[in-house]
Image (cartoon, rainbow, N blue to C red):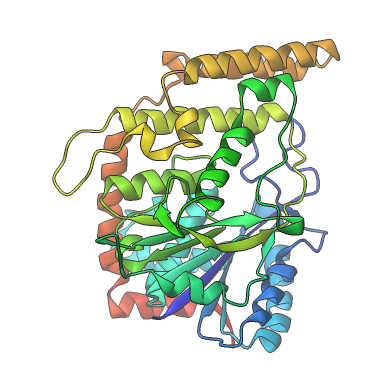
Length: 409
């Protein structure tokens, strides 16, 4: 089973996203003048006795200004790591992607440009699925650059069920989870008044308790963490990440996969160590992206229509976490949480942030909702992805695109 391990890495400037109205694309990109967390993630791969996988590093910079410096820095890092981990390492950044585009444009104009970009989590994840097809991988395993592997059996667990059958269903994907210091699984809960209304952490911990601490090892997944996941080619050649999702692209991918009849199972023995840097962004920015994401996913489910070779999904298919935010009380949750936060900001004289949360509360209004039919958009996107997968299967195209990658061997 040919295996590709993908690590996306995100780079920015030191003050990126801290000021102004521009929303951050990523939660905590590494500052270009910092070392970051990627080295620890790659070095952790030395734990494996067998080197039966290739590694792809997908490098996204937040602006054109840092792309060249980021590329030079990564080339030096990967040259050093390739000598230690003894795996073939590939690098894809905007520099290599520009060459990809030239090849695709020559034969297909700009038909597939929606998949050929580094702007946002969904596009980066799609690029990893594209590379998996170019390198003819059977499965792709994903971790993030602020994680590292501590379990010597991580790879064998990733492969144990994928592509086989469980409970008379094919295992098209496997979802794992994150552990923290002292093997802690649950996130620290925020005790603020705002968190009592917008209770993301509480609901996530409920899901962890249900899926990790109770029941059998393998269960049908109700949540998916992109930084600890496995996807089989049966799935990644047929379903893309939705490029309209600003964050939470992993949970949204689970919705997409279920709609198209694919099965993702949660494995309570499959985990990775997570050490995320603290987020520097003001609350109103991350809250805004979450609001937009949950509204979008709610519409995707609400706008479903019965179709051949698809299955209708329900909000309860994603309980307890996601269902708590895409149900009928979402509008009330958004308005109430914004009201609470506005009061908190006004009490300390931060009128700028208070005004941003007043704006956030209006996102439930009809004029701010997606103008297109979200479900129909997914159908069109998936149709285009199927077409692109056929292109990537062509030997001539595949060979040309593979030559664009920087290789460390």
